[in-house]
Amino acid sequence: MLQRLEYEALSECDIDIVFRPKSKGAQQNDCRDLLMGHLGKPTLSTGRAIAARLQGVTDKRSGLGLLFVITAKDQHGLRLLLSRFPAETGVMAEEQGQSLSVQFVEKVFMKNARTYKSVLYRAPTIHAAFWDGVAVDRQMIDTRGSADYWIREFLASDLRNTAAAGTKRVAVAIQTAIRTTDDAAVRQELINASQLMRSRHNRIVSADKIVKELGLTEKTELALKDAFPRPELYGATFKFDVREFDATLLFRSVELDNGAMLIADNNKFDEVFHPKPAGRNSTSTRFTTEGRVVSTKLRKTK
Image (spheres, one colour):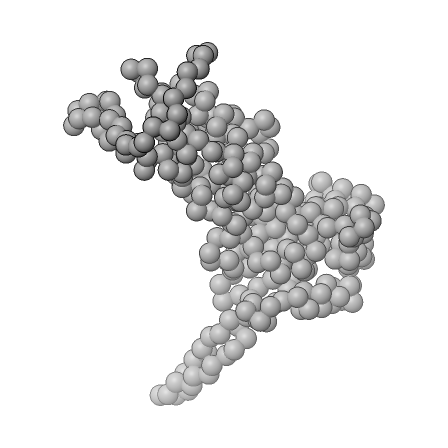
């Protein structure tokens, strides 16, 4: 089980994190110092110091945990993997002749070997110190991404991408994809997706993860992926900020083949214009709206 855990860590750990420097900007981090010390010379003492740090920040909700500290080498250099498994409860039953002896056990570890927290660090050599890593939290059931005590407190780290930067990058990519695509179906799917994305506030996501969760078509996924300035940004993780998202995707614009252009707040567009199919077999859409005229403007067309 541990071999599989170590082997699959790089693909499973999908949250990019980076150690926080000291408040005055000094390139020093207490957790990183502990991990570097253990990686340089693994002993029970250095491993116990790491476990003690985790114990000091683990909240009561998480309870008792079993920590594995795994060091390894591969063709790329050194690897350090930390994995925490929660304590669960179980019942042990043993046959004794014609009767059954039942015992309640409070500290059962790895009853579910797929429920754990992990973080992986890699370095070419012990002298080429790492400042970032990748993490995962398979214990979270509400898909927020990771428990705060695991990344922020135990590892003294933050997400590599800030919430504002990551969210704005996705919003801009959606805008670009909508503007540049010639496929009406792709455009509409992106517009619908932008509404569904808003429910991911405060969750740790990536554009790639959102696309997979929403089940977007391959054409739409490709259009969005091509709208990112660099391919690796498509899979970059960040905490979704709905306020930043709304600030970037402020308005939705729909242009009709009869020359009309409809513009409204992206979040209220359907409430304002009430789009409906024009007929059972028609490819046209009927928009209906009502309001008081507050201004009329003329502007140049492109």
